[in-house]
Length: 631
Image 1: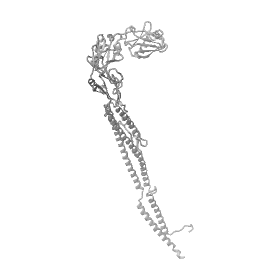
Image 2: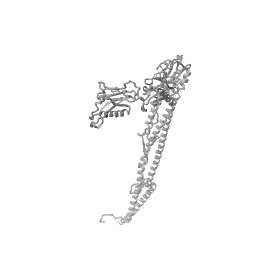
Image 3: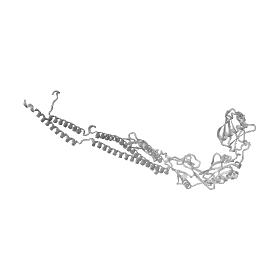
Image 4: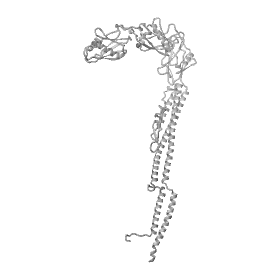
């Protein structure tokens, strides 16, 4: 043929095409068997290919979240390990406190009372301090008993006129001079008439309080005020009233124009003025020298002081309406004492007309009076009036002392007394040393020795306090070490676990307190404080500490339960995610996977077809070769 092409017979061409198709199908079937997929590209089946790709992508994303869930589970297990260890640690602390409570090896001292014989001239005491007594608190053990009342008493000279309404007179005013001899009043008077816009000031001290008094001047002409002197005095009065309170200090001028100051209510407090320019100082006092002639003329200047009978204390308030005379004052005091439960003190007038505060007939307690107005009321410092004439005291027996100590609430909480073959046995109910004044270093009671005798503290209970503190320290260290992959739930860290590929489903895990606020597991937040040995003195206090540890254990158990619930949720979600990944992958496989049995059978059939096609092609070719036989 002119175009150089080869012409095939119809039979050959048909068999050749059939063989080519068979080869193509065999190639496709072999690929399916090799990959296991019947859809290997979008050309095979676009819908199934892209749907399977989407399912496989989601399964891959969810499978990646499984690592975060696994780490979250391990973090929760680490926190649970810490809580379990802390629980055991707190239980050890409880055991330590219970051992301390069971220990009763308190130290004792037997005091020899044989040296106290005959009649006592005055009350004699053993004074106990330290040990279980609070700082600054002492326990007094009266060694004597009353054969006649020997009350403690305080006395002071009281003048009835101190409480009358006596108005201050001109005699109480006194102009002051500075160290140079010039009148301070003259210096201040120089301000009068000087309207130059300059402010002037001086320091005024009243009742121990110092204030700076500033004057204001007028920059206009004198016609604007009545007189220059009146204007300045008015300014000063206003400034002083503002500084100290209205009506406390009187401001005036003498006929010579010298400014004077006076204390208005007669409390006896000196006024001191210091010139702001020269720095000189001088006192303002009372010319008659009587510090008690002032008037108690309104409620604002009531006299107050405290009276203590050794057990109870009350504040006494007096004013002119109920204390015009000494008898009135005594009635007022006694009524207020009775109304406020102070029963061991009585106010009365002695033979010299003085007010006397008399203690109770038991002679146990000292009477004390305190307050800033004591001197104003009594006119002088109170003095100890001593024992009443003819009063005598004898010493208590050991059994009487034991009874009085063990039945005294203050003493019995710190010591326990017993009779040790005629000696007074004192047991120190504390881990701290108990000091005894009134007994010498050999244990003989003399009522006078100071700092010579003491009883040691309970060393075993003291050691238990150290053990408790060591365990408390370990609690915090256990909490610090309960971390996984940098997250410690016991120290307040937040653990966030994501559950789906879009991030819309997650859980936040964190230790919370009862109010729902983030917290950490520590001795401080559990309310477990470090102990001093003295904290183990009292069984009642140990019981309170044990109760606190029980509350701490409940907190730990509650937190453990919360973490357990979180762990269950995460494990639940982990199992769900595993199943979802399997579902997604199975769905994708259903769309793309090939049936190997089917594809194997197809391949065998195609191979058979290929062989047949080859044979048919050969036979067709032989038919074309028949022409050769002519040659």
